[in-house]
Image 1 (tube, rainbow, N blue to C red):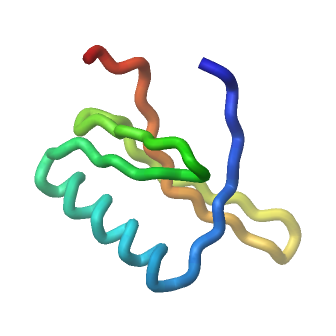
Image 2: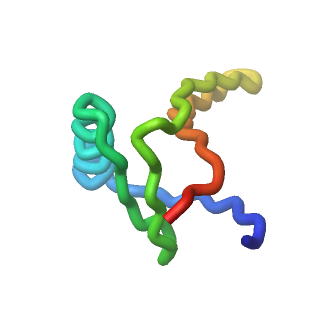
Length: 73
């Protein structure tokens, strides 16, 4: 698997819809599937979740992160 580092921007409504689907999956203990820049990702129900905050001068960045390893089929 090749390394990848992509940022994809979304409008308010599509972003909220993705967050809502993710929250529903997390709450119900289900895996979550999302497509980002042409690649389909399956995040398992046992993924690790964290929130990262960065500040650089006057600019802030908040990242909701989902971390997981290789999945068996």
